[in-house]
Image (tube, rainbow, N blue to C red; front, side, top):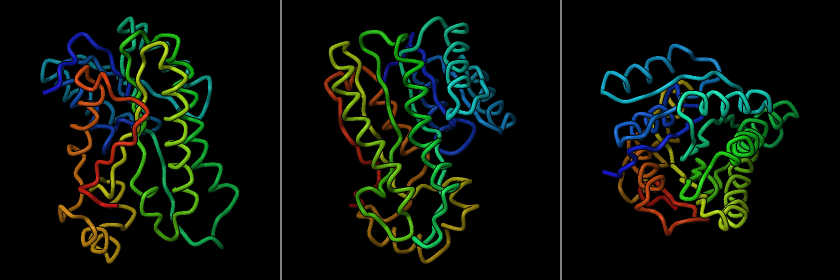
Length: 248
């Protein structure tokens, strides 16, 4: 178990799925956690309740990461509640799939605004508060390795995330702040269920290509994030860490 005692973590998009698992796992490892959500207050409150009932500290904060005012308010609320930020997990993201001919301006801007601009705005707001030993973890995706059809815009956003990770690792390195990407492959969440991605030919194809022979679970990703967030990963920065059961 990674030791995060005394640290404060901000997790965006943490009301469900991978984000919720990350928030609860960081708390279980000793961190105080800010649970960001865009719309599901009930989901965020459930995550906070799970953390506090287990003896941890957590706070839910609403905010659209693609809006600069909301990003700043998220960080301000975190500092007001806990006095510092040590770990930032940029998890908030959306996805829509379809062939090239179905791409629209609205779809493009929606995904890039949340997946890419949101990451930049929250990191920009948090950066002045991160001290030596800080860890920024961007949640990427295995799609950048396998480039599946009908994912052009989504895959492009996650390719941008990988590139930003490398740039910011160099930018923040002199301050001894680490920046890494953790990239899940297909993971069983409410979102992937509602999108019809599970119990489908798509799922079967992904599992068939995965050496460990199953879908990911949110906890699989959360445990990797907890390691990368911790001082155990103090010599790891600028990396794209695949958490996908060996899928390439």
